[in-house]
Length: 566
Image: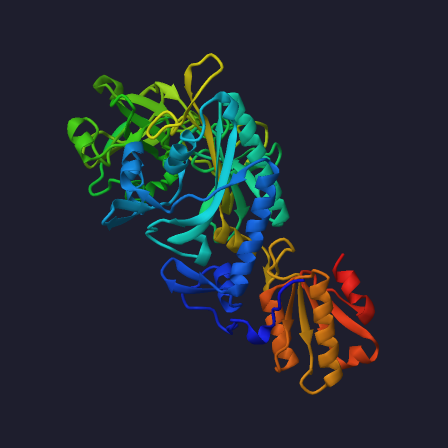
């Protein structure tokens, strides 16, 4: 039998107005419905309904991960700082780390657990016979976000399901990764989310292949490119476009230098040449970067695109410009760069366009009429420009669309990034040789997922929870019970019968007006509302309302429990 839960004794206060700092729909509704309260920027308390919704999400996570053989464990949130120093991430993730100094030494509050789980598993496995190992935890994480916002979508303290896999070889890692990938699809299916797995870059986590599970949202801080024709999808950092199908080159022009004072950027140059009708897409952006060997590289894209830095490239810093005076900051052009030891890499869009307006490699000067193969040459063609709507798909004849979205989960093939380093994770193979493990990691933020579901499932009246996430399956309302003993008795009996039948039911037994109860029921968003009132009781029925569709019908009082416990 399920425990009692009556609105009259619940820690629950619904709000007519959302807090002033609530920008996202999910934040506004979760606050108004009494699911959460803000303690400080990026730090929230979960009230009973919010915690119950989070626990429901955790049940979905455990069901699917247990189903692929993953084992739940719990690791400390307090990490020795030297563990992160050894892996190099104390520096790489310095901006978001929350550090703690104690009598026991220097620690940090874990934002993720790759170092800890690697050290833990290494101490528990000896042989290839011990692999694979799949483990996960649901635990609080900490990140010093510079701009916490959108309620539970970007916080400083949050609960995450983080999972890790250890295999003997890359083939095993890829097979395990597919098991987690499929489990993630089932998780988001059960949460009734319109998700798209997209190819992504690994960032500070490391590794090679990884996917973000993206949910379209008007408040999303991410974007991904997608092709409806073939299903290609990648976030903007990783997305590539196919070869331009139609050249956009204009009539030939002479190469002419122009004095462009105080115009070191695209927008300022466009303004300077406003009488010519210059637009950003007719400019050639030249970004100076340094490759993994320390050599300078010039990256060329049209002026209306951003450069995707990849392959270990990093942008020039002030000391790099000092060391390479031929690359004039703010006024770089591609002409003659190879003579100064600069390799030129260009996006295929450069080949399709021109003549270009670009830097003249002279302070406060630009040129017009720069033409490929006449005034400058390219050493390597590579897709390095960010994609835009309508760009050709790199895999088929379709066109790319750009979708604004929220990341609901992320999976990584880590390879040996952590296992081959410090602290490392090794095993002895069948020939007696020591080998490193091949790892994967897989994250879903519980609160973030709740917020994503709320963003997707709501209407003008409030939340509309899918069955798998809803704190309660049924919201029972008694109308006028304080004035009608028969209604009070029938509602109490129905409440007890539902509990005994194993139906999660929230009973609104308050002595308030029907309007208040209906408004709160819609705001709280349980999938089914069951209404006991005097008129219906006189006919031996109760009213049922399906929150998602608004559809109403009546159930015979004696059959309601059987109908709802199916």
